[in-house]
Length: 213
Image (cartoon, rainbow, N blue to C red; front, side, top):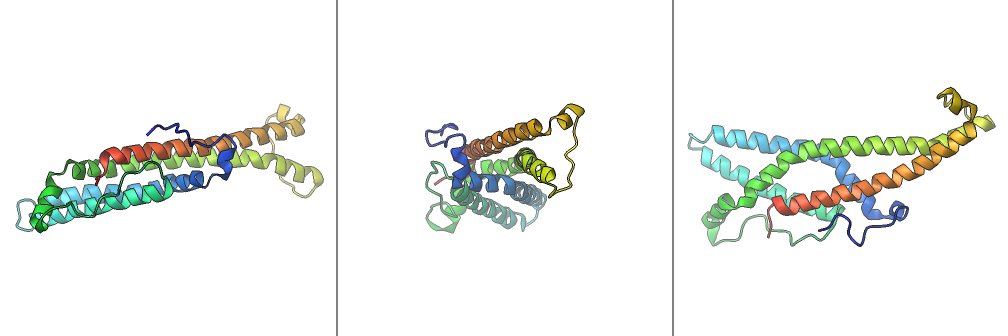
């Protein structure tokens, strides 16, 4: 899947794109989901290895791997609902096989079971990056858009907020407000475009690491 797909919206058209906002929501929530997934992967793997010498080690490990596949399928559904893209058929919760023993054997031997664990470990640092970058850009963009509004309210006496800034900017409040507003109107759509590209990257990563049908 190309990051710059033909269906990518125009620069300002993205402001009316529902998919851009749902993708942004997914990326912002990935901080929380990434922490939960990382905790599950590291704790489950450590517990399974620690109990490997005991009789309960095998059931715990199988339960952990089954939970990993369940979370991988849930992540595919979550991505498909919020980010979209050319998503393949979502796999069943358990591998196809004749009987439970065969299914559990496929679960253990399936390379995607283990790469799904890698995906969940990567999800936390990626979530931190997504959240930090997008929140910073959105905050800056919305703050710049608010500058001409606050400047107008200040000029009419409706607001007592002093925008301050360097002496040259304070000496040219109208020009400063216009430039800040234009910068904000540029930065907000750019942030949404970046969110779409990051969402497509996340879909690509999921396609190559998570369990597949």
